[in-house]
Structures are given as structure tokens and as C-alpha cells.
Length: 375
Image (cartoon, rainbow, N blue to C red; front, top):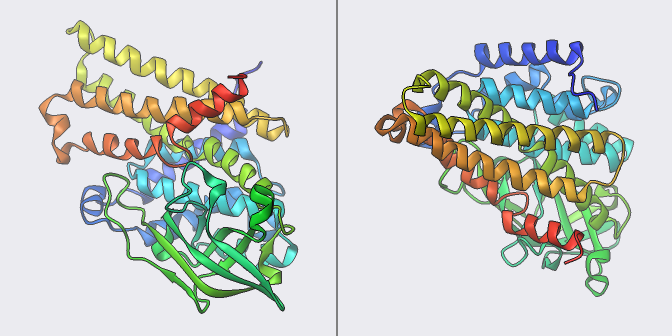
């Protein structure tokens, strides 16, 4: 297998790094403390073309067809050069669980109406899957979409949804035929200004404070037939695709953050004076490189339309747990300074913890891996 990154991709990575260093370097410490979403920086990303990485050119995207490798490398570069892990998570959540799914399953009407405004930065899109009693057990959801003339009546609440408090549109998964279980699930694109649709305030949380999390509630919310994504009952297949892209791409920016993290601790630690410190840095390097291999393999599988459920879970488990472990090592290497907010070391650990929960917990990834091994 050739691990060489083509020159065109390397050049684009350099452009993303330069863009992030010049235009995404506001006071992250203050925004993190206040839980402020950087809408100005979001628009700058759109103007540069970040959101356009997850859409075809016909609907505002960068390339004729979505180039997953280019997108993942760009998110790595963004995570490397931009210290706001929350902004990177927000971008990934919209791009790889909403935009790319519309690009794959949407009609021309849906792509023009929903995809283009998100690419241009005018709309924010949320993926509404999780519920209070169906987090890890995704398809035991209680949300329903009852067929009526001309459309559906949507009822239910989705919680812990990235971008929910400020979303303009939500990709909502609900049961259209509870008797059929997961095969009775359908997906809908719902404008959040529809009657019966409401958003909660932003929830305070441990990390990734700059990206809003919250609930979406639907009470007899009418959704027209033209807003159904895919066929009725296709929600399971759509969600499986979404989760694979999510687990592949949502952690790419965290990989970039780990690269930056390693460079910073090497510069700080003056390697060679303390063996225990050197060992921690070696462990950080090992985690980074094993994560790199899994990420590259996952992208290759997706680009070639090959099965990758196992690899998606392996990658999500490895990268999310590695970011937590390396972030803790970085704090220990920095000593007391690493514990202080002003040094911007402890924030990575707070941000990293969420990664072992969203897009499927680490325990769920282990369950999937074990099941696929025949246990």
C-alpha cells in the first residue's frame, strides 16, 4: 500500500493551515469560558470552502464529486492549526452527518434547497438521531412520523444534538412504522422554523463549549412528502451510512489536534533530561501513528465503496481513546502550567472526553467489534 499523500493534497493542506492560522485565531479561551459559538469564523470557513468539501460542485461544493480523502486531510489540517476543537466538531457534524448524506440520498430539489445554503454558510444543519432512551440503542427511538395527506406529522424529542440550539434545518430520523422495527425508520429534512418545531437553549458542558448542544422537540410538526430523505423505511440504511462517515471524519480534526499537541510537548519538555517525560512523548507518538493508519485505511475503504463497519468502530475507538490519553499526558508533561486554563493545555482533555461518547460510545464500539468477530 502506498502511503504517499499526492502533491495536490499536500498543497491544499498547506492552504488550510495558512487559512486557519490567519483567520481562525481569535480568543478561544474567552469563548470556551463563555460558551460562545463563533458564527463569524463559521462564515469564514464557508467563504474559504471548508463546508464545500462535503458537497458536489453542482450545489456549491469544491469538486465535481466529493473527495473524501481531501476532506479528511483538510479537517486534519484545520484541527492542527485551529485550537478551537468545538468549531472543528461543529463543522464535522454538519458536513459528514448532514451534508454528505443529502448529497448521497437527496433529490435534486433537496440538494438545491438544503445543501447549497449549508455550503455557503447561511444555514446550519443538525443531525437529530439520539433520544433520551435511545442513545447507544439507536433504533429503539420513540420519535414518530405519522403519514397524513401531503406529508407526515412529526412528534418526539431528540437530545444531545450538536448545533441544535442554532440549527436552521435538522435531518431527523423517526419511526414511520413501529411494527417493522429498524426497517420502519425514515429520515426527514425539517426546517426549524416550521410550526411545532422548537429548539432548546444551549446546554453547558465539560468540553467543546464553543459548539452548541441541545434538544430538538417536534409536536405535530407537519413535514411535506418532498422533505422525506430517501424512501419510507430507508432510515436504517441512511443512518448506517451517516454513522460510518461520522466515525471516519468527525475524529479527523482530533487527529490534527494530536499532531499539534505532540509538537508542543516536545518543544516544552526538552526531551532527554527526564526519562519518564520521554516515555510519555513516545506513547503519544505511538498513538498518533496507529491512529493515522486506521484513518487512512477507513478513508480508502469508503472511497472504494467497500464494507467498513469494523474499521469505522476500530478507528472511532482508537482515535477517541488516544486523544484522551495523550491530552492527559500533555498535562502531566506541562506540570502545574498544564492545569491552568491560560496555558491552553487542559482544554484539550476536556474536549477529548466527549469523543468517547458521541458518534457511539467506546463501549458500543467494542460491542460492535466483538460481534463482528463472532462473539
